[in-house]
Image (cartoon, rainbow, N blue to C red):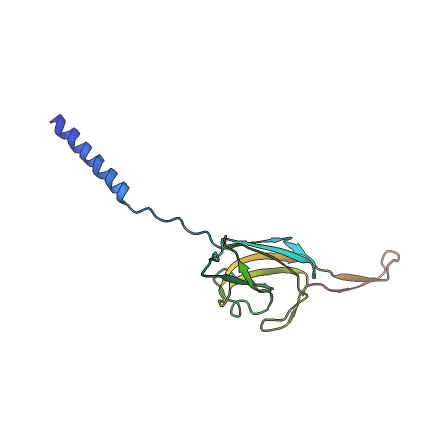
Length: 175
């Protein structure tokens, strides 16, 4: 009796170990595309360095390229340029992705967004950098950039006694 019970336990253990060894190993999920900006804030005309990683890797038989856009429209990965992102400036075209799935370039913060539906002046506030593959409008990577406003104010009069009415005028601020 005791031997039958031990035999059954041993048989179940062997069968389970074979099932574990025979089950297919699930592949690791590929990392999604990622971009990093340096700096993450700056003034109009300032140079931004952008690095991308985990993109489709160029090979001897297939090259991959991306476009980079700067926009005031907020969108997510999977959204599309010209649908969810209507006002933008294409700051880099046909940027080559190397055999490691990486790229690196730099561009200047534009003073105007002229490639989208409407021309829009860039001012202080939050903007977005989007990356799409060549010949595809789907956004695959997003980074946020803060444009530091170069606003100016004028005060008239510049000094006076307590109770003096002061007029303040400002220009160069975000709407």
